[in-house]
Amino acid sequence: MKPTISLVMIVKNEERTLLRCLESASKYVDEIIIVDTGSKDQTIEIARDFGARIYHFQWVDDFSAARNYALDQTSCDWCLVLDADEYISNDSYDTIRTFISKGPAIGKVKRIDDFSGSDGINHEITYISRLFPASCRYVGMIHEQIVSELPRIQVNVEIQHDGYLQQTKSDRNIPILLKAIDLNPGDSYYHYQIAKEYRGIEDHEHSFHYFKSAYQAMNRMEGYAASIIINYLYSIIASRHLEEGIAVIQNEQEFMFDYPDFYFVSALYLLELILSDPDQYGHMISTIEQFYMKALEIGETEKEGSVVGTGSFAAHYNLGVYYEVTGDLVKANEQYELAAVYDYRPALDRLELYK
Image (cartoon, rainbow, N blue to C red; front, side):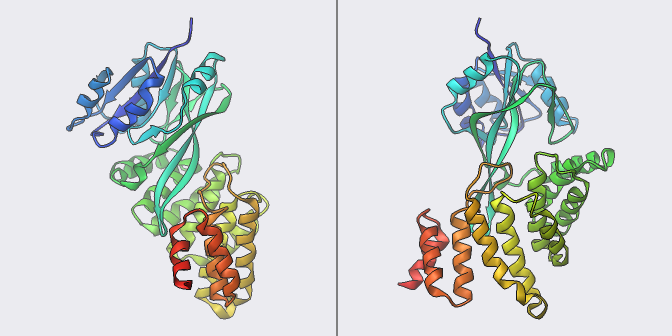
């Protein structure tokens, strides 16, 4: 008998995105389990239109409790877990069916997170455990994780996620994360997650504090270790704690040797450092060029935490800006042209000024 699979979701007031999510995923599953934690909008009506089995759960500030209750309701062999602000963007039917037919394992899907940057919408890659046997359960009151000894295997399921563009959930998430940190003070994961929440609401001082704590607590075996280092450097720039960055860059080049994002943010950092005190740091200006060239040499990757463009169009554009500022307009134009191949708007705008 072929194994069966449930789409399992917890929701609350998701009418803006739930239809898109269910349209993308319903064709891949045998049943849909929706657990609602208190919707006041049309969420439940949208779910009913897809034949979902709907349950209600009293919210207790614990995502694992809600997720595990939802998993308890499934009648299938496997579960696919999505949030309402996510949707599957590639044809995954054969991938999913082949994976669940091979026996127990945890499927890690690729999620592309949209977030706002200075140059528009950026896209960060993460890998998350979302396809697993129905016997698996979550732990953690927020940013919950599947606990299992089963092997974790990347599967070619691509999920788009635009929830970070809304930033409507920080008021809920931050208190839960603070509670989790109180219970697990040495856990780098919760410090990392709360730092991202504070970054999302542009509280750069708190974001810096928690990224620094995450950096100091991590052991580099974490799947998100590289992301901590990269985002710590961004937080150093945003919070203007520039004195903190030199040691991070010096200490992490060996560990981060194949991450274009690391060299990209290091170049951004050096520019800010030099501008803060040209007399003391001006001699480091050529290193900016070296770092952008290194990012381009590595190129685009599919690594955890990588932001699309740091190994291609964004690095070409920023290198162009570097050449323009240092007076080499020929090289600047070359880099803008290379970035424009990707239809990168800042580069296209810059080239218009050359005409």
